[in-house]
Length: 222
Image (spheres, rainbow, N blue to C red):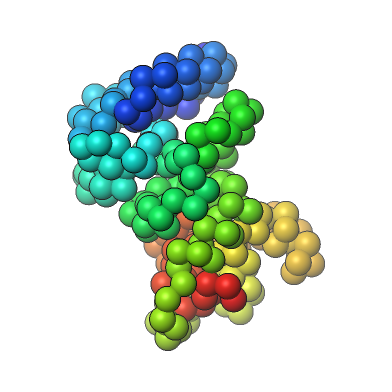
């Protein structure tokens, strides 16, 4: 384990999930599992005791679900860990709400070990929203609703190119895909994403997705 290992906490009501994920992740040279909890009601105390960089958070738990637990984490003072929601279903109705609450992405519980490890590294680096293809399907299904008037106060802060990038990120495109679509270098896309985050006061790409839909820039199925 390196001195800069990613500190991970696991919150899931199934002991086998906690133990299995814990053993897998602790075996990685750049990761350290610093704690676990069996319910969302224990999350705030867990964060205070262990100061994780990443929380793997089950959405469906008996006392306090992952959505409410995520909100509780982001109401705490100081720096917040990044949260990856764990779900059994790729069309879980809580997922978009979880992104709005502050989660950095989500992962299916039946993902491969390689996908789980990669997801943690990606989110720790703040580099990408997880599972773009799943994100596209989920957002299209659960953000459907009345047409939203475009929020010119939000969008007026961005250049035309930044709006182009934000639109594609919100639809689930990776930096490489955005670069290909807009005929830009991938590093240039990363720079645009960083500027969007800074101008709009957002934490990560997951919040870009939320902001794009809530501002009316992108509509479900659009």
